[in-house]
Amino acid sequence: MSVTRHMWLVVLFLVFTMTIGLEGAAAQTTTIKLLGYEISLTDVYYNAAADETTFTYLVKATRDARRGLSHFILAFCFDESVIVRSSHRPIEVGKDPTTGLTGIKFDDFEMEPEEEPQRVVWFVLKGDWPVEEIEIAAKAATLTATGVIAGPACDPGVCLACDPPACVVESIVDATRIDFRALRPGTYATKLGNIFLYGNGNGGAKVTFTDFGHARYLADRPGPPIEVAYSLGPTLAHAEAFGWRPADEFNGTELSFSKGEVQGGVELTLWIRYVVRSSNFSSDYEAMGTINVIPVCE
Figure (tube, rainbow, N blue to C red):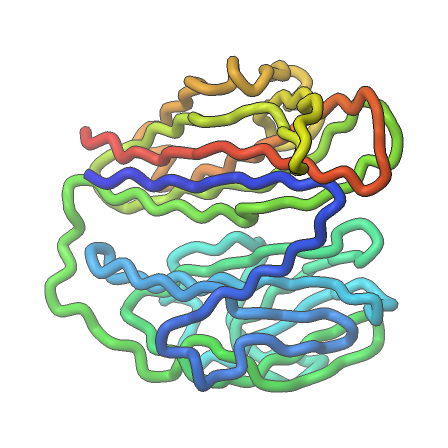
């Protein structure tokens, strides 16, 4: 049985850029800019037990994004039967009449740069898929653009003996760090990110939260911490109903999911609320915590 741990890092007044290296994709183009949007392949993970490969992409609006991104498509050589699951619905495989490209299409994407500066999407394919440069096309309003990016190759490997173990639970966190600014004293709430759980084995999962604390002042001289509380729910209204728990009380929060729920896919949204009682010019704070995903065999 394995335990997956994810750490959250929250920083005020700090701009942070993370680059993830991908084994087997070093010589490939992992980031491309189309129509003012940067699309990056951030992770490729092969689960040998389930014989599945997960591809994760980050779509980020730049200052040049003038129109909402309606959809994008990745060239693909097979039909949609090899797609096990995905973060985006609807997802389909076919020929895009607008761009003429045939592949995996993230349709009805509807990403507006002013409202949503970035989005993480992922999909899971049956088999062991190597990475190669593939065509990509995007559409924003009436504009289209094409290019190349690293993605699933046309020659996937085949697992010859892939009986899954008693329980396999995989998890994806669409953000492990968030940066935000509070320009004046007050109480603020924002979404930290989403946690996705899925599996095809004979077991459920338990999610626990540990090591969460209030935001501490990042300076040589000590300063008062910012009070932080956390909650869970698909929307802010649901988070309010779930109840805000101070950082020390949020530790020990435990959620359990059955085998059926895990097989169907579980999505959790983590929220943070913080109270700023006084503000200084460019004051940096950070708060951290650990999310534990534990398979539970039935």
